[in-house]
Image (cartoon, rainbow, N blue to C red; front, side):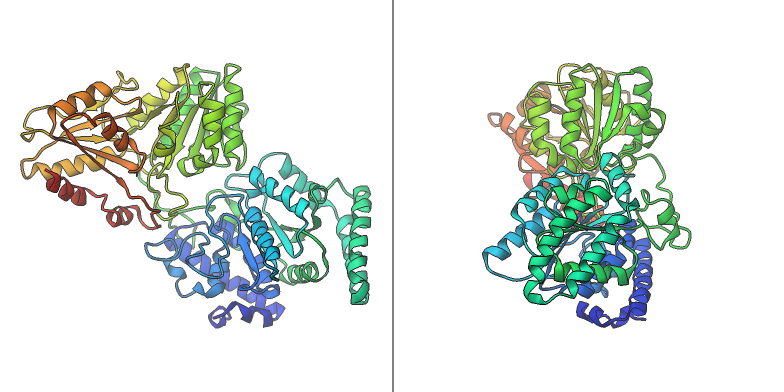
Length: 623
């Protein structure tokens, strides 16, 4: 086993081609076996094994700065940079992160988790290097759909202007993001891959430059690159990266390690100014189930590594409830469209995409564009539902405020994965959406506690025309309470229990969305000691049910809020502000003022003391 001997990345410099190929096989086997148990982003990382080996063979993993976009392509990188022994702890509580993290390893140049940041970060490192008169290569590895994010083009544009030396962008072109890549850029990359003339010309120039004396080589390379730029426009379709100021190299077979090493050595030694190396890979490479269904194996829970089959989750998720509701609503209302940002499967919209392809819009990894696209549609009588994970909606806050809320357009924003999402960790927890949205005027914000409420809220939002609506819901299996919510309206809470047998004086639990389950479990514990609370299912975060809150402020000694969101700026803070002049004391339960790590959701709740047992003890102390 070669992998067992790699205790430092520098040892990869001395491996033969055959040893590198063997190591690639061993890395894939290691990744498959571990992720089958822990879950994770297996398909992206299987596709970048050879890129990782080539980078570690040519560059200094500690001295040079290599930034992995999103970070879910970096499992082989983790294994080869001193974390093989801990790789079994991937995405487990207290174990390795599923993404790159500067606090986890000095080899991780940048902490990542969201898409399209690598070129900006690597360019920042190159700019800082030049200001400090330092010497190292700054490299961004972008791909898996990240180039569809607008921020990557902002960075490419700026890099083309700055023209930094020793700055390399490696485009991992695997024709996939999470769902299959869409749009003109993907078609453009396919045309580039079909072109052979350009690569032949590039190789001839490099071969010639390598034979020249070092004293004139740099001037020759610069002149040759200018001549090459002129000639290539005759031979191949216009290359956008060259127009942006990069020297383009590729496309290259991303699974041919010797060829990758050869190319990177040439780029490192001969190229002047910023360089983009276009590498073509197969997502899920080396594992047939992932090759056949890269979308499913992009990010997956534990599975059988022999068959690739996952365990049945046993019931519909909130994403499934959303997708089914969209199909029902769209059948009744032809103006309804669905918009998502490269997450059709993850948000439950695959069925909608199949049945209504002309009314389904996948914009790529471009949440900002998704919201403003929806805003434009809504001005012409279309009813857009935009489905985005809560954590990714953070990137579209300006568009929500400026393009949707300010003109009061009837866009429906459906925030999936609100609250803790478990093993993906701090970059993916939906912990802040209430905090950053509650202060935006004209927004109606709803939070269902169960599948029935979610269906009713979606149906209500489909008919609402007086402004934008936000519906937030968690990851995981949908709760079915068997209730009738026909009388639902924003600003009207549900009183769960009667006023009989309450503690004297009474106190109340006010729960937001799926935190109702935690509130009810806490109440059950307290009822054993005769301290039964009044329980309110808030349903509507904005507007609040002011009548019910006023009644609680007059009747109750304490009002406890429960929400799966940060305490700071959360719903509880607004309730406390509203009841500030009442006799009732308001205590807020939610997420602490810090980033919460990765691990099983229940374990994370125990860490932050947001379980029924912990909360019951806190309530007792206050009472």
